Length: 144
Image 1 (tube, rainbow, N blue to C red):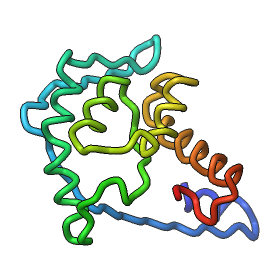
Image 2: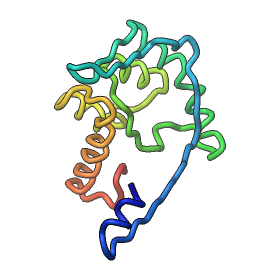
Image 3: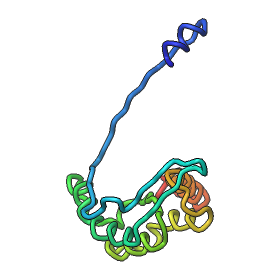
């Protein structure tokens, strides 16, 4: 595509940027087939096992430890949260398992309540909700 743009549009320039960043990667135990997505004529459909909230809850400690221990962060209330909502049961179990204060998941719950689970787009809506709330409250940085 970059070649086509440059050859067929006089004066066009193409900047190709590739970025790969990953803080941590964890595979949840007993999660095979827990969330199964398919693209069909009707669109993207998902099938979730009944125990997805339990699977997330049982594995969240390890995943967060691997991600944040190298940064010496163990108080998960000290960081801001942009969490894919999944559903209320998942959020409830994560909050309880990690001892999170309700305000940590406020933006996530607000977006879930207002728009439902929109798959990956939820994360962008949550970021925007957090940004708007921070501006409204006169905070110096997003997520305070």
